[in-house]
Amino acid sequence: MTVEFQEMVSLFKKQLELCKLKQSETMAVLTSGEIRADYAKAFLTAASEIGANAFELKLPPAKQGASGSFGITPLTDNRVAVECLKKADLVIDLVLLLFSKEQLELQDAGVRILLVVEPFDVIKRMFPKESDKERVLYATQLLRNAKELRFTNKAGSDVTYQLGQYPILTEYGFADEPGRWDHLPSCFSAATSNDCGVDGVVVLDKGDIFFPFNRYFQDQVKLTIKGGFVTGIEGGFDAMLMRDYIESFNDPRAYAISHIGWGLNERAQWHSLAFDDQVFGMDGRAFYGNVLFSLGPNSELGGNNDTPCHLDLPMKNCTLYLDGKLIVKDGDIVIDEMKAAKPQLA
Ligand SMILES: [Fe+2]
Image (cartoon, rainbow, N blue to C red; front, side, top):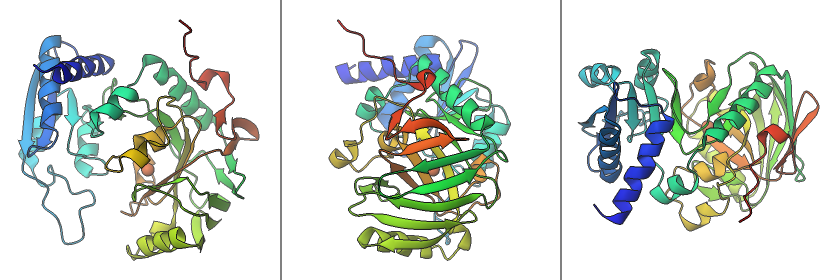
């Protein structure tokens, strides 16, 4: 074993412990081709060290449908594989099942699912702690109890969400409950508005992040929002890019406002995308004190908008209120229960 592989096995073993994998349980690693073969091998080794049953299910690549690849995964139309994974207690997803009906089917069957697609250095740096779960659950509770969320920034944002209709998304980086899906690494909580319940203006500032393009905004983009939908996109090059992308779906539901929340992972780095843009982007999404603003579907949270057009737009230095109570001030968490642990002095 190389030193790096050993390090991977020991970190993944910690992850399986966070996921409460027991000796009596079975872990499956879902793979396709040779992608992330090192992760698959390290997870199998780690599961064996715990004494659990483990297997790898390697499938051919997803068949690309005529209407694009959204929700089409290597599991699509492969019933035997789906039934096989249902027998596992924990599935390590190395192929990105997110937004697929097969993932929901596995969750409904009680399978815990952990998505692992980020580069190893990102996983290592942002690796979850038990205390992350408490802080994320605290945020979840705040969102669950709130009727109204408002956020502003110095670029001119001032937007209000009506809340209460839908459940809250809770991502703390490990799948430790039956049917739970999570993402390694993560650490945030998010809500989605009541139907048609978002109004105001959002001004994305220079330096905010534009997923799925994996780039920083180069100039400001002003979005006018009425009744839960974007009605105007103004600005320069980035606004043109955003308009062009959303229009390409030819779907009015693509203009809807999606999930909203704030990041809590103090190990996330805003600048990491400048080093490497071939990432999923959990640094920006889970960044401590960000506001993760997004456009598109709400089906992940129980709504009926399943448009394939989804933009995650992490914003820095915002101020966020729940029912008028200050939660994030200029990009800093002000509630003690959610603050990052102070680094220990030597
Ligand atoms: Fe999203």
